[in-house]
Length: 445
Image 1 (cartoon, rainbow, N blue to C red):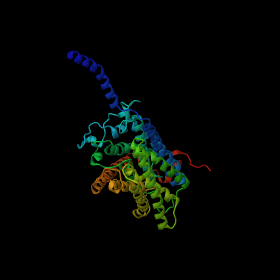
Image 2: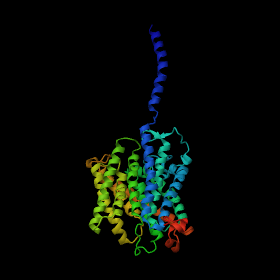
Image 3: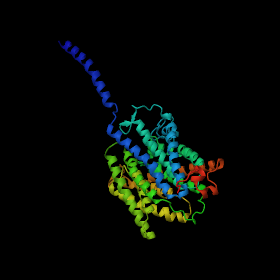
Image 4: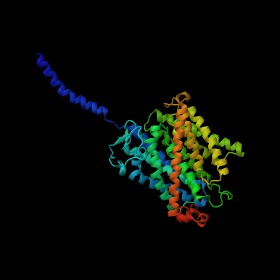
């Protein structure tokens, strides 16, 4: 009787166990989350909206009327160029983790492998995310929009004087040697150089803004000043465009920051809130600083303050609380105002549209203050227990990015200048890049 019971139990287990194993496999298998997918699709569209038309209009309104099409054209051409390079090898350089090992510094700590070149292995069913909850195709496109806007930001530093052909080659090479490696070092995960250091960069303060700001500063120094700068008036030709562009950037930035949570969750919600707080504070900070200094607040000033706040809160959006965001925003508005006006005037460099003054300085300030206000003791939601240690890590990340970007950008520009020349002729600059480079006018009145 006992043997028969054991035999029956064995038979029962033989039937049940495969089902239990299958159930365990089903539980372990990642499942697509439609809510997260919908949010990431929306965020992706918002970030692309930041470049075209947001940044294009923001920059386009600030140049002289004879150069508006050149700026719009550069933003659109960069969007097309970087999209294709991202598909061919950029995504792989930034996010392929082949050869990476936490705590081990090797080539793949700086540069991703080629396992994802030409998007190898990407199918409609491949999924990704913090818990593999949305399609990898969406993640690829979301990160592509970051890769697009970063070189487009550099345009503001050399506006009105670089040849279109040189700009295209510079952006392609810079994306390959600077943007994609920095993104890999910061965001690729265990084994990435700055990831292993513990650098906090939620949505791109280092990868996007410091990177672009420093590259812009180097570019405007290598190209030299615009003809007539600073004695010839070079006022923005259409501040209405600039304000509309700033508004589009403000709205689109919710995809930039809240979308970087990679899920429709509490982190995304808090990132959205602190982004709004910091941006509003920076807009007011810049406005009042300008009002006190120059006697009147300007539309260009408040638009610039908006962008400064958006930039500064970007690295901190996933870890700081509302009051930390308020401090970061106010600091960004005031500091970037003085750097974009007083510092530029004293040092004499021609950063045409303040790419360095807003994105470079704002990114550095935001990255460092992230180390302070991510601490729970100051209302943050990060894991920072030693503020001093985290601030040092942030400074180390900023320093590495500044040095790496400056050196590589300088080399790229000098080689291109020797091979094909970077700058339009004085005659072409006088006529304007719209006619000289594209044989078109922005306005036919």
